[in-house]
Length: 549
Image (tube, rainbow, N blue to C red; front, side, top):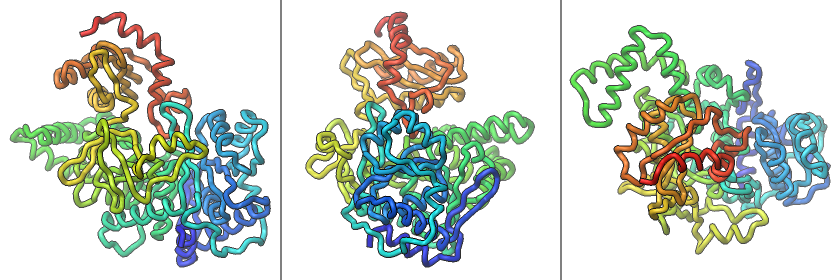
C-alpha cells in the first residue's frame, strides 16, 4: 500500500487522540487523528470539484500549519502532484517555479502571499485561500487514495546555489521507502520506549527533509507540535518538552551563543564555573588536560549545566537531529557537554532528503553517520559522493539533459565531496562546484577553512573564502566584527594550514547575507556565484592591496 494509504490507516487508528498541534500567538490548538482526516476529506472535496486530472500539479504556498498538512495529503490522495513553495521566498522566484511546474491551481495560506504572486505573474493559475478550501460541506469519502507507488507525488525545488532552481520529482515509492528508513532509525533512538514520542517542529514543510520528518512522525503515531513563529522558539521548545526534533546548524549555533551571552551577563560563580568547564572540555578533546579540569567539569555538571539543559529543551530530550548543512565539531561537542547528543543527517532533495543518519549508539563527532540500510554510497571522481537506492529520484521536472548529467549508470552524482572512515561513517568535505582552483593549480574546498575562521570569530555571521584563478585566498566576513578581530582569527588559523590554503586578505561587510537580500537560498545556503558578482569591486580590492605569495 502506498504511504498515503498507510497514513490514513494510522490516523483512523488514533481517531480520538491528538496527533498534530500548532502554537499560534501563545495558544496551542490541535487535531485528533479523526479531525485531521475530516480536514483532509474537506480539502479532497474542494479539489475534486475543480475538474483536475490525475498528475495535474497543485501549488501549495503557506507557512506551516495543520491545514497545510491536510491539503498536502488530500492532494496526493487525489492523484495530484504537490508543488510546495517556501512562503518566505521572493515572489518573483516563486512565480518562476510555478511557471516551470505549471500548476492547475495554487492553495495559499493568506491573501498577502496570493497577491504577491499575482502581482509578479498576472497570468498565474487560480489561487484559492485556505479559508475557501475548508469551507466545503459533504462530498468525497475517504476511500482508497488514487496514488500508486510509481506515481510522482511532489515536485520540490532545489536551493539553486549556482543557478535557477530545479524541480525534483519524487514518487510515492521514494517517499514510502524513506519513511521506513527514518522510522527505523528513530526506533533505535527511543530504545523500544512504549509511550508516544513528543516532537517539536519548526522547519518549513516545503523543505524535503522537514516534510519527510513530519510524515514519519504522523506514521509513528507521535504527537507533533508546530512552532509558527521562529522568534518564539526559545519559549515554545521547553514548554513542549520534546523527545527529539529536527534542526539546522544555524539554530544550534544561535542557541550556543545565546547561552554564552546570558551567562556572561549574569556573571558570578556560575559564569566562572561555566567558562572554566568549557575551556577544560576543549583541552580534554585536544588531549592536553590539566590537573584541575576534572574538578571544573564535575562542578559544571553538578551546578550549572543541568539547569541550562532544562531551560533550553525541557526535561524529556533524547537527542537533537541536525541536517541541511555541516555542523561544526565544536558545536556538536558543546551540546554533548550538556548531555544532549546531536545526531547528524546527510542527504539531498534528489535522495528524498536523506542518505546517511547517525547511529544513536555510535555517534562520531564531525561525521554524518553511515549510509541508511538499502542505500549504497561510494566515492567517484574528485572524491564525489555517488548514491544508488530506492531513495534516488527519477529525474528533474522537464529537464532531461540535467537529469542525464546527474543520473549515470544507475548512480546519482551528488556534487558533494566526502570521505568515509573504517566503520562506515561519512564526513562531508564540501561541494565540488565550490572548489577554488588557485592560479598555482591547487584545488581547495573552502568550507572547512570558513568553518575554522568562523570558530575564532563569534560575532561573525558568515565567512566566505574566494580566490578562484588568483594567487592566494581572501575572505569576505559579515557581521559585527572588527578588522582587528578578523586579523587575529587569521593569525590563529593560518599557521595550521599549508601555505596555499592560508587566507591573505579580507574585507568586512556589516550586513549579513540573507534570503531577503538574495544572497542565501531558501534553506540558508550561500549563493556563492551571486556573492562574487555583487561584491566584485570589494574582491578586486583585496587583490590590489596584496601581492601573491
